[in-house]
Image 1 (cartoon, rainbow, N blue to C red):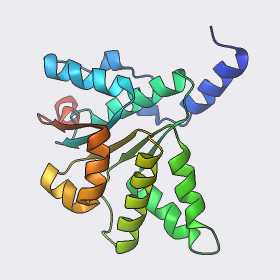
Image 2 (image 1 turned 30 degrees about the horizontal axis):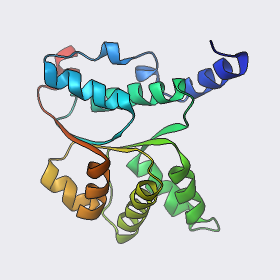
Image 3 (image 1 turned 180 degrees about the vertical axis):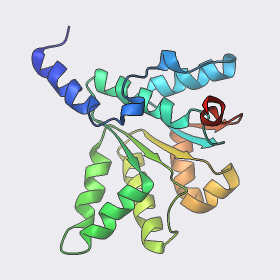
Image 4 (image 1 turned 60 degrees about the vertical axis):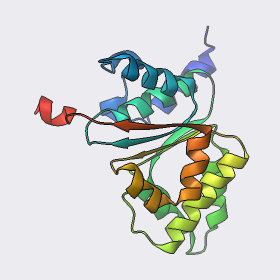
Length: 185
């Protein structure tokens, strides 16, 4: 049973989820086979993962389901687009503290970084992404990375060391199939 404070806290966190994903749960993800059920089971477990592959196959949807589950379990979970993380880092160079931004995202119990392949590819981005992943790895905190890239391209974008750290603590899950958004069109 939730206390009034816990319910209010959960409600305030839910308000940060985009409207499109606010009311979804794992039950809304269409499982076609045992593999899909294993993917849902893994995401529900709150472990690290690298979700990559085709557009519109449910990667982000599953990430928001996982975040919701973490919140419901009383854990501090967060979703961020990679571009937004890098914008926060860059903006901190003007009188702020980039290490403060890094610590904030390291401190989350569970972190999802989406569109990890949508970055400028600068050395600064590479360094701060590696530091984030390495710090979270050392603190044994689950991290989920999401990309529309194939595995080889993703390894090149984030670096083999960062890829290895996240994959070693979780699973690498490739999503294939038709774009669900186009089917709804």
